[in-house]
Image (cartoon, rainbow, N blue to C red; front, side, top):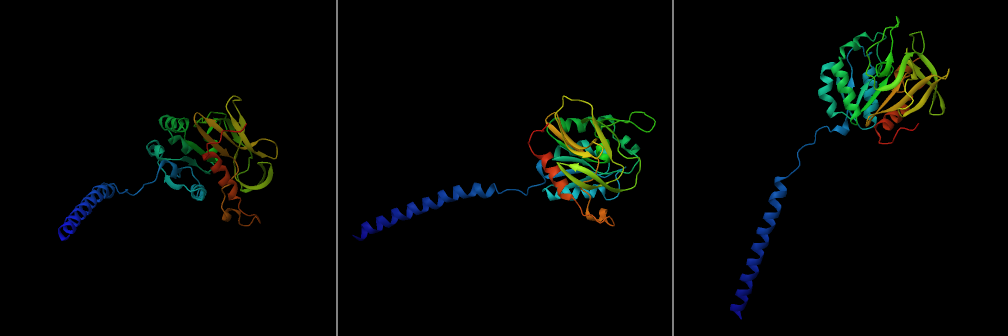
Length: 261
């Protein structure tokens, strides 16, 4: 009886040892494959240009909207660095600028080509005011000479107003009248009826104030007025910020939803 009990105990001990060994074999690889810290992904970064001729606070206003939709802003002031950073970006952004667009000449044809290829392969571009001017297919200076642009949306950009003073402008934005911050922004005229385009903003004279367009596999959205304008831009006007319009604009741009003609 005692001998059988000892034999049973030995067999149970052996099974227990084998079980422990098996568990060790299973656990060790799991520990060895512990995840590494995750860096900013392609889906998570907004690349925002803040070099000349960006106006004071304009890039940061775009960055604040990017954060509201869950993106991490990354600012770049040197155009030559942009091609190397685009592969990390969910969207490339240019906001409001000073009135002189001449500094955009620092965007060489090679840099512009990199931006075009980024969008054509599925990237996104968001431009407000100066960022809308420079995105256009056609843009001319005051003498009528053409200005080199990104040519990523089928429009001609032109001054909506000849005055450079900031003001509230009545905009028909997605079927609702809005009083929006405006300063020397562009109006747009379509240059190609074959490219899918969705217009969602109009000035009071009926000209285009904001739209988005397909560009290859990517999308481009631009606006003359400033939906991203923070509250302090409205000081003294008796009006409040409409940042939720900018949030919706960026969310729509980032989505896979096709352009609605």
